[in-house]
Image (cartoon, rainbow, N blue to C red; front, top):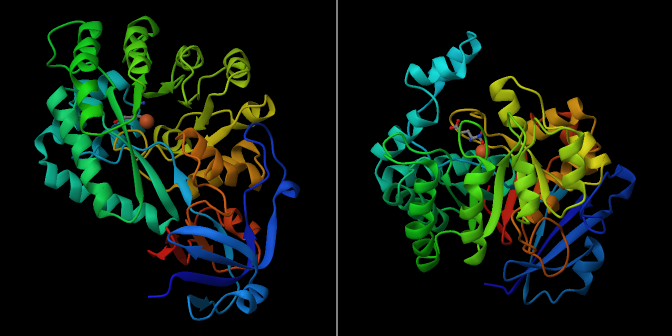
Length: 413
Ligand code: NIG
Ligand code: FE
């Protein structure tokens, strides 16, 4: 096998480089290389340039050249920085009940809500969970996602959270996508835990956190800060412990009520996700911090609620990522590109802002710096669309799918 690969020509290659991490973007700021090629070495980008020049300059004895027919637009592989795709069961009944006007409490009483998924996930074996995760990653892959964050949070005991995180780790080894695991044991206090919220969080941080480190299961700790889950006061000692152990923090913040974003800022979280209920006060606080604000339009669509105020966040100077929140309860769709395109039209976002939200700004939300842009030295993760104009991609609101997806320089779809 030859050592290098050269692929092209791409009518347009949108690098997503040279753009600020924070704030509003216009399409004019995008760097677009026309008739481009990508040279790949050992899964990384070695060079980007004019394809026909690259063909002349590479050593043909060591370089395998792939010449594409027709027009293609090339973008960095999409990064979905917030999902819950490790779960058993379905919550289709919840969805129907919500749409019939039932309240959260009525749904919970009828056996729905997060606890239903916890019960179903606990029933599933590790192997069953792996199968489900891999099946769901295939769906994401077809939509151009090459890196996908996956949370635990439906186990809610040391043993069951470990089962989920081990399943995520095994799935990562069995799928071409990169799965980035996050521990969301602080999703809610399990109904079978006979103690206070604080006691539950203490048990998790004392017992589970060290095992996460030992088995290299996750480097990220998430918590749902909400009236129905954990309060700011309850979460402080939990996050203090996580930070002392060198975990990255991320927060389910301001989904229905505010408070989570302030905690995210206080603890220097990598990201604060949801933010549908954030007001000008929270937006200002976030804008003065380095916390990435992650919009989750899939949850707004699933719940029929307001969207994250992405326009206001960007105008205030925040870095906005966009993720699918793929989960059985609030966001069953799991189609990042469609959701990002829908958010675009409701929030009046530029193409550059949306694409940044699912590429380099999403990478920042996961604290990874080796992807999300197309430039020398980064992973050769990229998606191709059969068109000559990148505007066509979001214009088609997710119905226009990638024709090819590359991960670490290999064609995986
Ligand atoms: O991100 N907000 C809390 N957690 C998930 C929903 C989980 C569920 O309903 O199963 C979310 O929307
Ligand atoms: Fe979530």
